[in-house]
Length: 530
Picture 1 (cartoon, rainbow, N blue to C red):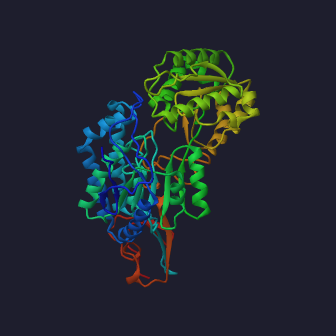
Picture 2: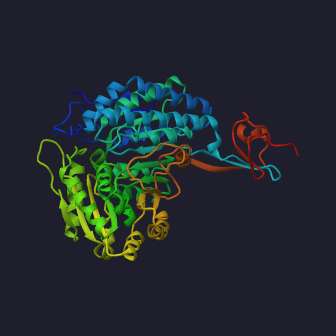
Picture 3: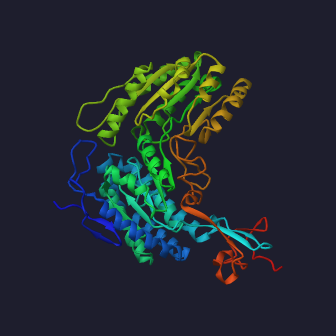
């Protein structure tokens, strides 16, 4: 069977391969699927970078409404082709077609594209700023080079390099995208790229607005993120891979935005456990096991004070993890990583309460796993128990008193999310007031009485956080238009003649709807005559 073509410089063509082709695996059977995909050489990437640099100049001059039209059209076409997309993604990932892929993730992906289109049309995301007295004006503008998007394995639609949130944000900000598919779902990515590329061409965008390769050598990936022709890189994946890419990009002075991993701790204060220990145990298990635990926001640690309520909670949690039906993992690397993470925590002193073993073939599964550790042990070596266990696995950390629970919060690394469950009593409120400020500076998203798994795709959402959850705490990969600012440069125009200014920085308001800061005040009006 011939290899699938790559999309470079506006055409689908055979790859200039760098090694043996590969096939995706069916996670349920462990067997390779039929389509054959190439490992692209640097020659492919070099051509894509040259084409992307040319397209960047064209897109920067392109009316935002045309980019928005392309995004909207792509969203509509994804819905029209939903049957084929869902079938391919379910086969490559073992994620359930219904409701996960068809009714949840695909609508989210379509919604992100529409939101990006709306932000591009509106233009207020550019932070247009005018000082009329000194005649200095500034705005956010495209980067001047293609954005490289390296997508993860666990969201074949919503974070896909050729159609997901990073793609939508980068293109809406006026940048072409060079997408690298994840090898766990290359056929899904090919279908998405085909649909999106066709829509962008129909909207009249440059031919290299979207380019796509399936897989590359690790050394070429490091070279790619450091290339001076790129505008930036967006990466979602493991901490180990992210740190290697970060080092390569930053050594060359290239921007890179990382969404890596986090423990996403849940703190259960005494009042919450006294009021509903068994329900909270079920809620924790449901959150940990959602998508077989393969969510970057999965709670990997639950901390509480030892008392009668926590004893009931622990017993119910053990039952829930023992009785659950383990889900399918995305591939052998995920299975090996989960097995290693659980083994490290046990070797460091955690006690196994449930699970802890890989299940026999066919396919890739691991027992739902629950561990326990006294807070005093956690505090001796907190880093040993905060490595992401990507799967249905979490650790219970039992504190002797409130001071020890506060110390656990203080030892939490940077994370994507952190949750606090509390009762209505005075004691819980006092304890909340001590713990919340500690978690607030350690987590991109703070939740009350709610598990961290799952994200609402709304403008106020933050999916990021302090290192090592992400590469920079000031940005988010979910929530538009904020996510677009990663792929923009802040540029000023000082004493530039009116006819040389961009339309949205001239005195006259372009459309009466765009927000601009004029002489210190946000307004939609034109700059008043002086």
